[in-house]
Image (cartoon, rainbow, N blue to C red; front, side, top):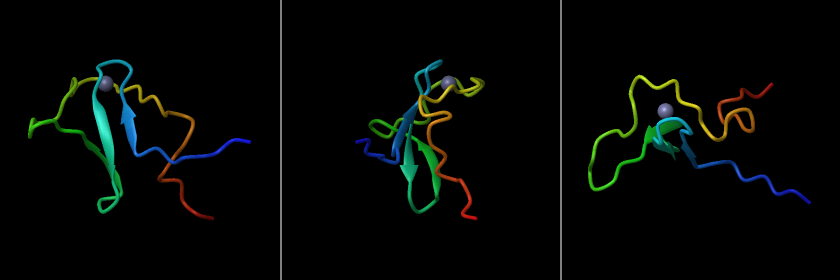
Length: 61
Ligand SMILES: [Zn+2]
């Protein structure tokens, strides 16, 4: 049996950026450590490790 756990985190396989799901904003926000600003390459075409597996923004029909 497969248990589906909606991801609350995602990471970029290209630049290493990590995001966390913000339930209030309903979007991913950059994970910060010690108040550090956004990590990763801002010009990176992020290749999220959850791409194609789960879309939290999929509209209900
Ligand atoms: Zn990236």
